[in-house]
Length: 215
Image 1 (tube, one colour):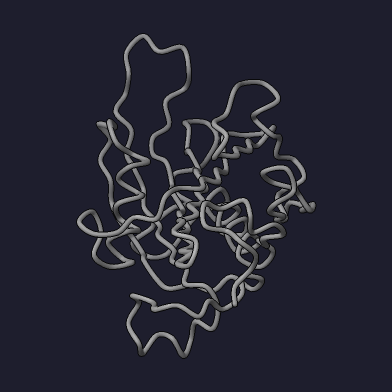
Image 2 (image 1 turned 135 degrees about the horizontal axis):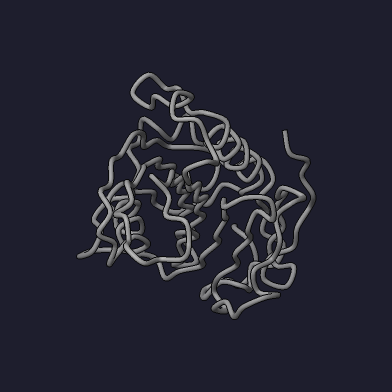
């Protein structure tokens, strides 16, 4: 299992524990101001943090619809075949409760005592590209987390991308219909869990409507 280290995002406004073998992509190429990207130096897995304007009607009438909207935005323009496996309400340990109307069902509020957050796991089967010099993955596991900061009119989208490239994994290790993930997806799942445990906002002024923390 990978070791993790405390990592500052967006100039220290957010902190989170990330695998120690992941490197900040902005040191080698330009990354948008509203995004942080980290890449496995020993593989192909990547982690993206996006701070986006909150999606509301007409694009998304519910939190579940917002989750799908962000996913489709991330994968837009792709010719790959997508299959959804799980979608659920999750909890971030260090994200405080926000006194605001939630659009998640009332019965779920008893199990989600802090900021509303959602998880989605999907896979995309890649279309082989002739003449490409880069290895084309057979498929990519996508683990998406959506944190909805209602009072700040902001959505934080966190994506763990886990490409499965020929020679980098054993096909017999994976049977998603039987919840058999294989080593790469299990590692991605551990990363997602660590993010939910350690993701913390240190400076709320990072966000559009951020004037201090929750009331």
